[in-house]
Image (cartoon, one colour):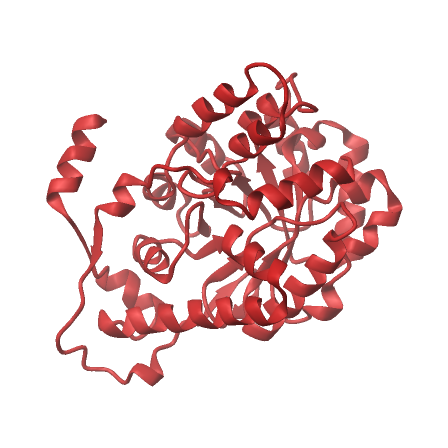
Length: 350
């Protein structure tokens, strides 16, 4: 993957035009139940959680977004430093550049900056069709000392991308083979289109360690590719795919019961702590956030620290206001109510 393409991705992902313009109607229908008498010490609200054998200070993963271009290494180091300081997990951007060019490996070597927090490598499902690339990726994961692996599935993006994959056969078989070979936990993630229920059912039957919903509501890589493509028809195709994508909360509601005790990360359009509280109430293990963190990181470490501090304060504050002392209580109490007039409209359009 060329540096220019990844630079385009980072630049476009940091801009509003890459986001789905229509808010998730189901998320919009949710309202928190704020208590008049919470009966707790707000300073004692506990947002800690476990993920991949490590402890996070709050249930947040910085989503995959950088790597493979001149500034990618700098961004990864900045994000890793912030993840360690704020006690959150970090998903690296696609590691494919490091498999194609050994000089790019150093862009992803951030474990020393993030020794205590979960770190995940990332690769597209299409590369898993090649047994040699599967072996090379696992060797890279060992070198990077990651705790787990994201495999992203992105057929809609590939269909719009000028350099994208057009032969979409064999991906599930490659994933099955990789699951049998990987000594690391493997999570599967979408990139803005969400998972339909049949795909969730199929993934639940596989020995995957978890899922990231990657639903509609935030950055859509179909739109990202449409914005950078000059090919005839690319823009309307990307817009049509983005408009047809499944919202994050809808995907989450199907995924959580299907996955059982395996973690489901709510990713796609999580822009504020309220969104996180709603998703965590409905069983998300963590929320993953990419674009807002990327935008802050591009401004520098001070802006990135301020964003993460603000998110942590908002999360603990909303939990206190709803009377929930910790994440277990948040999930048990589920302090969320559905605004019926919005929900009725949502059911009608379904």
